[in-house]
Length: 118
Image (cartoon, rainbow, N blue to C red; front, side, top):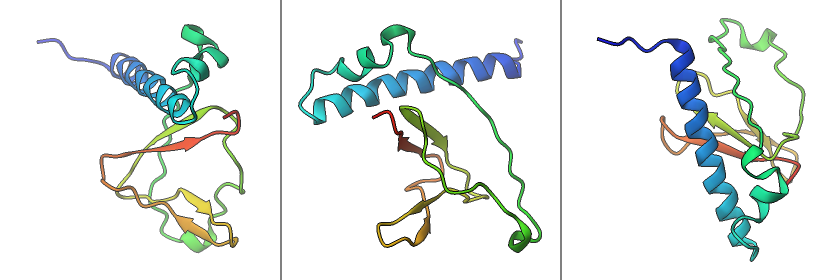
């Protein structure tokens, strides 16, 4: 029996999320009336880089004492977040300035942020 280690699982996950982003960039390009490959080509083609980061945020027993991250935008092209049913920390600011916690449509859903470069 072969036991798959953390490295192998992380690499496979990274490849699959990269493939997802390639599909999303084609869809975004086409939805804007551009050739499907336009965004992929604009951001490096097949050599377009990706960064995989895994964060663990345990539930805080005193959330009123936490600072979290300051308001920011994502500087890249796409950010793909795997939803966590236990910790809902991602918030977006509405046009009226109110911060709203993002509720994924399903517990196993990805949340995709369109970054500043697009």
